[in-house]
Image: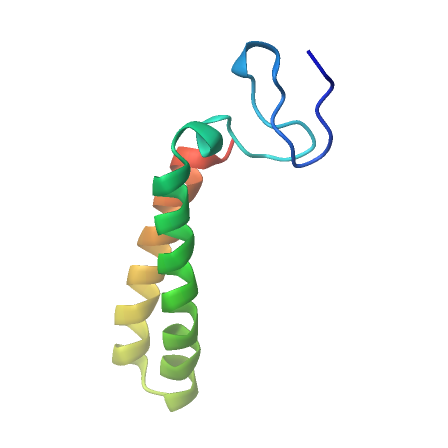
Length: 79
């Protein structure tokens, strides 16, 4: 099989993506990965807005949601 380049899946044996910290599951569970990515895109502006209010409680709520989504994604798709 061909050689993998940075950011491309290593084809031999379904190994992890070469040149990144991504697991091969990013390709096998693409829909779930995309959902996590969309959730982070949705939450990031909310986190920014909450931080700009200077009020800790609203920021804690959105920060918690963001961290939970980030952790889930990294646990599933990153070495």
